[in-house]
Each structure stands twice: as C-alpha cells, then as structure tokens.
Image 1 (tube, one colour):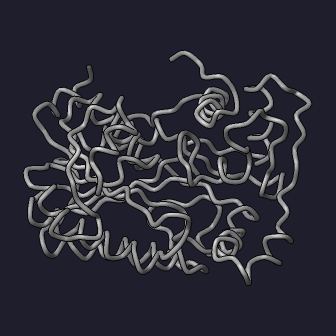
Image 2: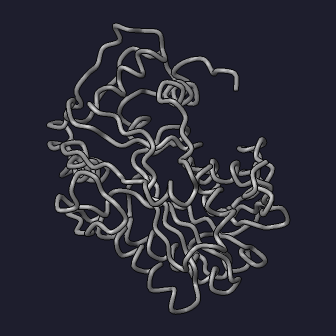
Length: 330
C-alpha cells in the first residue's frame, strides 16, 4: 500500500454517476484505496442489481435535485461528479443544473468536488500540445457548456467550494458513450471490421478508464494538500498516427487482416437535419481532423507518474467489455 493510500481509510466519497463508465471506474478505484463510497441513484435497488460487484452504499436520489444531492453528500470528504446527459442530448438543460447541485452539496458538506473534464473546451487556437493554461475558446455548443461548467467551479471558490478538474481524451474501457464503442467497434457481436472516424495520419488522445480512475483516486488521497481550484491534464495514450488504434484492435483480436473502414461522415451530414444525435456527432468532427494532445507534466509533478496500462492490453480489455472478444483473466 502506498503512503497516499494509507491516508484515505475512514474517509468517505460520494460518486454521482456510478452506473456510468467513468463513475463506476472511479468508485472501484476509491474502494481499492480504502475509501468508503456512497453512490447516488434514482433507483438504488436496480443499480445494486446491475452492479453486484460494486460494494458501495447506494443512496436514493436524483442528480437534478439539489436537496437529494446535498443529503447524499452529508459526511462526505469528496464528491465525484460523473453524471452526464445521455446520448449527447440536452447538455445545457441538464449538465449545468446537475453541476450546480453538486456544487451546492459540496458547499454544505465541506467536501472537495472532483469533476472529469474533456477536450471540448479547446478550439484551434489552443495549439497541438495543450497544458492547463491554454486558452479556452471552443467552437462548439458542448464546448461552450464545458467552459461554463469549469467557470462555475472556479467561481465557487469564493463560496468555500474546493474542486479538481481532471481533463482527459476519448475513453477506452467500459464506457457506453465512447467513440470507440459507439462508432469504431460494434458491441455484442463478433469482430468483423473496425471503423476509424479520423484522419488516419493525425494523432488522437485516448484515456483508459481504469488508469484515469486510478489518477482520480490518487488525487483524492492528497486533495487536502492541493489548492482550492486545481486542473490536471491526463495524457493517457497519445496514438500517433491515429489509425494505430485500429492496428491495436487487430493485434488484440489476433486478426492482422481485419478490415479498417473509414467513417461515413457524409451520411452523418445528410442525416443531421433530422437527427439530434447526428448533429451532435458532426459538431465533434473537428477533434478527428486535427491533433490535440494533453500535456500532463503538472500531473506527473504532483503524483510522480501517471497510471498507464499498455495500449494493446487496454484495447483488449475494452473489446472484452463490449462482448467483441472473450474476456481476459485479470
């Protein structure tokens, strides 16, 4: 056990969004670090049945209810806010109020709020290698919402709310809304092809959820030593050229001739006037057409190293979680 882990026994975390990919992974990591974990859900019995391997205390409540979140956060030392609007829909309508409720709960309990950030905040002026001081001038609606959310966290410092933003790229792992699962590989069926959405010779950032969750847990262990508002960039896997992620799929599956297909962006464009989901996909296309790598030097200087699973292993575990290939033993 590390020195950081010895600090966490008897400390309590509330995880909002524990049935989602990032929330579930963070709950597992916090438990492994000795934290007592509570998880908010509208239907605790259903959540418990869906996640029997997650020994958390399920608390009935809705992330859209300030009273529910505040009650659930009572006695917590940290609140991890992993709730997201489903299916890329109603971001402003849902994301802003949910975060406001988490901020209110952290204020009432004195807990540190931890928020998973992403790269939507950055426009072309941010550059290729992006650190925590890069300008945030997004060109998309979701990016503007993300910037507003982080501004809410920074502004809450004046009210005594301490927070951490951990920013990462696209998810690998058991994450239902990820590009890997939604676009690149079809879940729950034999692997017959892999689709790549980007320009093949341009790098792309990936974050393997267990590594990202371990990073969150390590920061939670030392949160009392951090400034009131902190932002850390998680590098994860910088895959350059980007199409190399498809070759990792080939290696993991043992299929060196697995077809690599291009994503039909023209079909998305044609369908976008009639489909909100397609419009949201199209808005994110720019992240597949230019490189944007997160600079993790600040994180490494604080933790000593960034948790890192080899790419082929991360891809293999992701495919197994999707039912695209047999599960591997831990």
